[in-house]
Length: 356
Image (cartoon, rainbow, N blue to C red; front, top):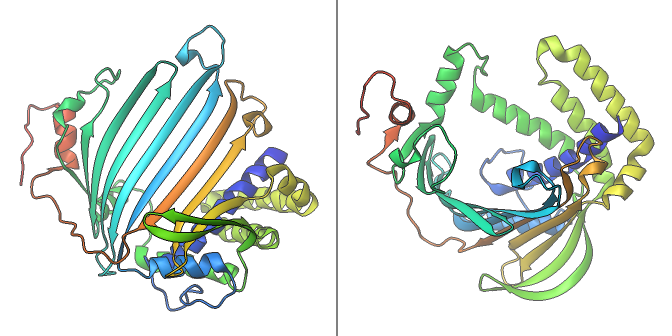
């Protein structure tokens, strides 16, 4: 039970941050949003609220994973090898019209092992319920059963509404009104988040230039009391969304996790070293312009069966800039649908793809 509970502690900490971002972001504007105005005494929430109030901005994201592994995939000599995985995303977001959000992204995924580096590039465009993806580069030697050259540099359209309809037609139970369910979920999250202080300033680290803005640099941490109060309430909320035939089992598992947390929370919190971040806040505007999180993980502490990965370091970095600058996001006029994409990759009836 210890392993599950520690994983729940980490996941709930991530959920706390996610709740703050979603409700402060302006991507959804419920009248009950607790972060709709500043004055709550939490400098991180206040600065994030100011950033997300912009009608447009650029978001540069980076996820870096460095690990030491003895996986046989990298050779069967049993020696530990260094592997680095980097995901970078440059995203321009235009939310001047809340009913039709627009975004444009450049995505790069790179894997570096001893003596070799492989990478792939993807472009993405989102307008309302439509998402367009284009694969622009990939390693030529990938051992895949499909020929990716057939879709290289070709826009592919995915419709979120069409996907929901097809899932419903296939027999999957879909919410009767997705928007209302989303409102209800956010309202429930707001209820358990209301009045809580999420972040504490640990120390001030000076001033730095971030994307052309002079910013105050702080080390901050999730408030321990907030996390301790939030986890049981969040588990009770999550329990409501369990399938009906799994309700009894879910309730039993949640009851055990809550009891374990009640007894061992301090020990788990100490073993995690807390959940700390670094943030940069623009001196002139008060906007949050950068967030960084780094954690060294010993996988054996979370899974006794994990032997391949000896150690791992995770780093996440988000940089916001170009607030309220003008940029356009247009839907491509030349694209394939998802069905046409599958037809091009896996032709079964001799049909050829078409373009609108």
